[in-house]
Length: 364
DNA sequence: CATCCGTGGTA
DNA sequence: TTACCAAGGAT
Image (cartoon, rainbow, N blue to C red; front, side, top):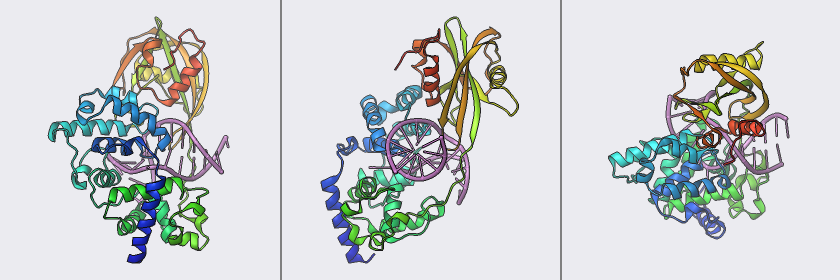
């Protein structure tokens, strides 16, 4: 885009933003920590989903120091249901880094920001521009979609090697008078007007600059490469009862649902019944022998890269003491205690199956 | 480079 | 029901 056109584009976009922007909680503060927390929660997560989590989180952890001194388990419990739990683990770790090395103060430059756990190129640019006015353009899903339409960029937005192209384009359009405001304006336009489906081109403040709109190709941008369909895995999990309590195991921190708690179980192999599979996994992962009391039902759940079809069984402890294989820890918990632990969505579905059983689950 | 990482909303 | 999408980061 020509320099004079770019200046006009910025003015139209920012004017629209100042009039139409949503009053979001993280826009009511200039506190870098609050901005940071919001950006972490907003990763791959819609605004309406984030808002209640953000309010609870900031009320409980208003500063870096308060977050740093908290237990990870409490942080994960507050994050429960929001997904991508490495975000919470990294945020907690970064807060401890800052509390120990920098008096709990967030650095104001992208290089230092990127050294912190969970801060990549997007959050570094977002915090630096929004909280500190630094001249860095952000590139997220909204920005790539807006720019692909605006400038007819044919590079697929879901290919890693297309990133430098979008970044260069975003940086060339950035409004240096207020980089943070401009970045938020592009993203707000993407969220409210230049949406993936059924964009509101009639209401778009920069339609006059949009090459896709001017040439009638909005619906064919952005370009995207197809992804293979995701597989379905058969799983089985077991509620092991002993003296009015049940057994839960803590998942290792590195992988899926790290730090969360689960009923013992695992993948059902081909040619194996889900009940036999469950007993096999229980023996391997806990060292316990159990007797089957019944089949409680089946739940479906979709993760990012696979779907789960999981059977839930109820067992009674027969013999043995707990000896963990891969898990970090274990607890025998009563109904009221169970919901104190961070539990995956699958287990909230499991708890629905438990309603009406002898073991009663309290609703959170 | 691509893949792994959660969940809810939407067409 | 399926598939895509949402203020990405770590590996």
